[in-house]
Length: 372
Image (cartoon, rainbow, N blue to C red; front, side):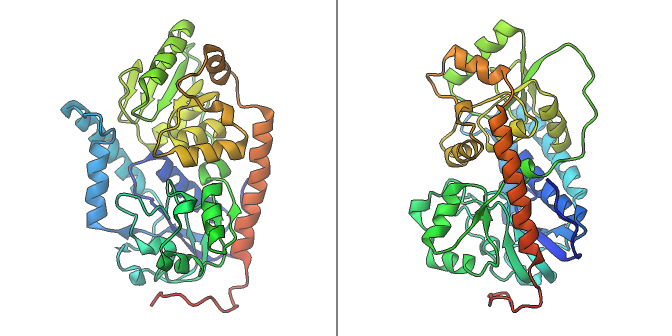
């Protein structure tokens, strides 16, 4: 569902656009491309921080910790990281400014905060960055699209200063009911919308050449031994290859650690099925109407369960007691028509929210913000 053509606005998108993570890259790119496609002058706000760069790059070379990373794999992860750098260079970005000094950014008609875990106070390096709560952002209008508190549960609440910052937004939307419930405790209403990777369609890929080979995309890391054993047994019986993309999973038949963001997009579209423990593994399976099975992990349990509940796809979750019959059904059958219908309905609502949030009269006084 694309956005309606609109009176052009100067829009900045504020998110984690330089993370070495396929989901983060694509949600940023698809959102800014959708805004540009609607006629807006949209760019990603190119915040920079040496501290965060160092943390991000260290993680990129050892992404499967606490599982040890052999030296040979570090070279492969470095190749993957360089592909991300090349993709970052092609993104439409603003003039670069220090993350800690958002007052140095350009002025915008509107800033759209999100998607991703932009409000997760537990994020290891972005968790204390007030900019994502709108602090000192130079915009006449402040809008959140598909933002999330990540694994920060609603009952934990928010510090008063962060709550006060969110109260200054002109329009709020989130991608999960946990985030919506947290905002409700603050007396703030938020619409529930889809992640950009599920909302906006990328440019179509050329059809895969018929090779006769079948493969399951394995996306994630540190799966349980029970899930790995179940997947291996399933694949062996059906002569299907398990291909792990982006990370090492020794139980897969093939490791494609060096895949870049564009490689990932095409690979997920070409896969016969998806086995994942990542949020965006589920998102791309749903996006491409692929059979899939997801093992929830402690860090991602909230957002994965919320996504599948919203889509009516809870039976795609796998636990230690999963039966062979259940595994067969989820990995051989495309998502049900009821799931497709829910997603289609949410696409309409998500587009309507963003269109409305950006079409508000910019001549009306903006709320007071600490932005100078």
